[in-house]
View 1 (cartoon, helix red, strand yellow):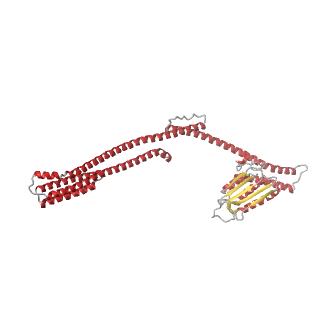
View 2 (cartoon, rainbow, N blue to C red; view 1 turned 45 degrees about the vertical axis):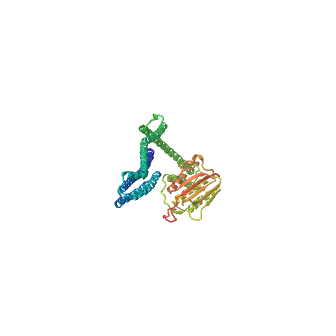
View 3 (cartoon, rainbow, N blue to C red; view 1 turned 90 degrees about the vertical axis):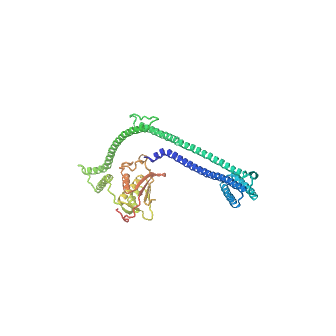
Amino acid sequence: MNPKMLARVTAPAVVIGVLLLAACLVSIGYIRHLQSNLASILSQNVASLQAAQELEIRVRQLRHHNMLYLLDPKPDEDLKTIQTDQQNFKEALDVAGQASNTDKERQCVRAIDDAYEQYKKDQALLRADAVPNRTPADLRRLVASHPISLVVDPCEALIRANKEQMETTAQQSRSVSQQASWAMLVLGLAGPIGGLIAGYGVARGFSKSVYALSVRVQDMGRRLDHDMPAVQVAANDDLQTLDRQMQTLAQRVEQVVERVQQHQRDLLRADQLAALGQLGASVAHEVRNPLTGIKMLVEAALRPRNPTPLNAEDLRVIHREVARLEQTVQGFLDFARLPAPRPGRCDLREAVAQARDLIRGRAEQQRVEVVVRVPDRPVVGYVDQGQFGTVLVNLFLNALDAMPQGGRLEVELGTAPNGGARLAIRDTGAGIPPEIAGRLFTPFATTKPTGTGLGLSLSSRILKEHGGDIAAENRTEGGASFVVTLPPPHPTLSPIGGRG
């Protein structure tokens, strides 16, 4: 499956899922935090309520034991019980103070403490004046003059405050539960709605892509062949329709490719016939002139009347023309079957010097100045020195052919940036004709009246078999420039002194 297509289809769903997961985690964390806070507050309220109720119970126990003491004073037993009640009340008061969470609760605790201190003092005075056999009327009068309500009322106020706080906590809990319910409802609706939106977006984008591809398929179908039925495209095409269109297009492409291949085979056959005809014409042209000269000399020597014997000069002419024929035939043989190179490490400066010496005489006859620039250090190349010399001589002779009335031939040998060799050959001739610039290194590409057009093609083949290359261009100041490049020799090869 295409990763890009998979990402494009699943990315919206993944994004929505991640967002929903994040929202759920945040909601869960928020709800748990609120519940924890509410549970803590509720626990504190319960503790405070229990403490308030415990205070009220303790103060009523204290009142009860005080009344018993006032009715029948028994210092040893009743006072000990009263002291225990006072200690229990004080402990309950401390617990209530610690359980107080609001200012209102703390105010109630302080009011209870103040009222209790006053009540304790009043009860102490009553116990000091206690005498046996008091009437109930006296006892009611004493109790009424020192009411317990001063302590009970703040305790009940504390209980009411705790109840109010618990009601507030319960209300907050109901509110949190309602918020959580709404949040879960929203998240539950967001999933399907988000899925619908993402699915719609993906389907819409995919439909557009399918339609655009279908239109391109239709356009390609029209371009392939006007004789075949056109590919039909509808705005609501699906993948199956597109697949059928692609199958139809593939069949048409196969038919067109078969036609193109047949056409290419026909063109190749025509090119081969044309090359064969051109080759025959070149061979005939190159062979006819030497044979004509030889024939005329032989006919003059064989005339019945006034025969002209062959002298030394005639024999030299015949020998030269035969050598010319041999060179022509050898050139065609070399092009048709280039011998395998036997490369070795050699100093390319020596190959350039040898090629320069071979064309020096002709250059002097044409008044062409030959300038060779080589570095002081050896330029090592791994080449067949004989074949590389053939390339150099061919390039030098082509440059001389371009300057029949004289000029300047520049040869510059150097090192390429990759460590290989670079040889530039520049002339001041007429340059490369535009009609053969694109096929300069193909066979039979020539503008010379007596040339075969095989020299540059053969040179290019030799250089490519050596891992090198050749390029040509016209110079802005006039003339042509040929650049030969060779790869760097491997360091483990044999030392300089390859085959010459």
